[in-house]
Image (cartoon, rainbow, N blue to C red; front, top):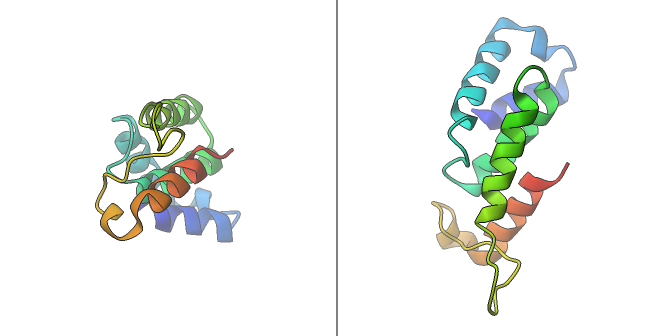
Length: 108
């Protein structure tokens, strides 16, 4: 998962050299090419992996994921500037969770 790869890369500066981590990064890149991940939690970890992994194509994919996240931002009304809670974890976290995770995923 993107979370496990993020942890590997964050805790071990040489983890990106391991074949298993490289295979996982390739799979994350493949999944990220589809746009925004299925939930904000995953989006956060995918963007972190893309930032840490670097390499060919990661910057473009990162930009794509971030643009699609920004497109989901509420643009008018009382909730302007927030993100709608519309993923698997939103029942628990609501708009605070959705907005927090979206903003963290967008952070450079």
